[in-house]
Image (cartoon, helix red, strand yellow):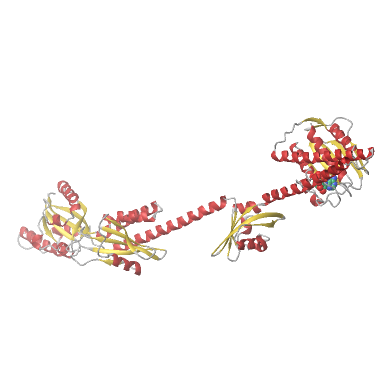
Length: 638
Ligand code: ADP
């Protein structure tokens, strides 16, 4: 402390020898004069100090206060007695200051404490009080010199900083900024104000009290509702410090969110002997800023959450969802859209819809314009998809939701194919049987034996054809429903082939020959013998059937490394390369209108493929050189 050393230099008697004061008369007299003179100088010096300076006797009773003391406290000279300090010390700080004083008097150490002194203006200010004992040459405490330095600004800044830290913590605790705002008001009282009121403005511009601390208190009058509305409107803070002697002071700062005032915070001091100052205005503005940030964060978070929820919904629903902006550029393409179309979001987002969805302009947009869900064909990467679109238009674009109805459509198509094919296929033999039966029943016609036999032959052949069709339909339906049980055993491939070929030989049409090329020994294969015969019989029947101009049909059996392989070759109509996969589809026929007069259900090859796959084998068709086809079947050797 700067004060102590010069004072000590002035007052300590052992240093008088070095002092440049002329000594007159007796040494005692001179010393007394010097003391008086020194005391006078000390007083002058002390009065010039910006701090409060006092002295006290060895027992601690005040003997002197400097000018600053009287200025600050507003006391008259005669009031400054030994207890004067007690009267100005804040009641809350008194006990602590007294205890410290007792301790210092007892141990003769240095006194140091922080307490609030009541000023002449009726407000308390924080002071740092310090006192040191001045000792005689013998070491006894002679008297005390004390100072009290105004540390109120520093103290208030520290408090404000701590308060802002707490406010920050409170606001970051939850995303509910309004709850944060209530907490801020609670924290503010009594730390930085005696009363705190928060006002919020609603959407219609009406300002109402949001919270007040202490609870239930009337909101502060100094910047009452009208004043608050003005602060919000002008977005300008107001500090009403109150005149000297008026213990009220208030301030009001606007609360803003995204540059827009949404409310205001009002702080009020009354009765606690504190006064709101510029510093408090800054603190309040800082709070408002933090509340604004918290409110903005909460809003952003809510927005993000809302979007994330919407995005999660979009990504989990099974319907494709596409969002187009007003220029028909794709903004969003969800998971289901990717899965249904096979087009990745990265390849479409940001691109025009017509470039991404072929047929968009013609089909989809037209369907959307209609307002009702529309099922339209869309060709993507060579695949025809039947997509059912619904569209909702909004301000900046259109949302399409679509689902894949290709399969449903396929099933629907198949059902009508089935009805058409089967009923047609049934009608032909039925008509033949009916015709033959009617003829046989006629009494007016003399039928010779040969004619009767031919008619009966028709009835029997067409009946077995009917039975075959019904069998095919039943077998296909069993395969579809998974009800077909296979009984896989070791079967001799050569024997199975011979049985089928012999049966086919018996019904070969004219011009077609059938031969087998098989090893002379057993060729064991793992198969269900009945279903194996079904496969071979279908292939041989087809080879014969689709050789309408006649020709050789050859069946080859060969043991491969791990498989047994059959080749069924004909030199008939052949199958174009592009259709070699499709012939195995259910109901698929190359010539559905029977321009060549060859009937069929389109089930035979489907059944073959299903059975072969269930036997862990493979089936495919190749061209047989320049003419006809070769069907290849491979099954695991046993
Ligand atoms: P279908 O009852 O029509 O014969 P399949 O499923 O057995 O039904 O055959 C499907 C289609 O494949 C046939 O309609 C025919 O167009 C074609 N096909 C099958 N086998 C042959 C073959 N050996 N030669 C030419 N075309 C064939």
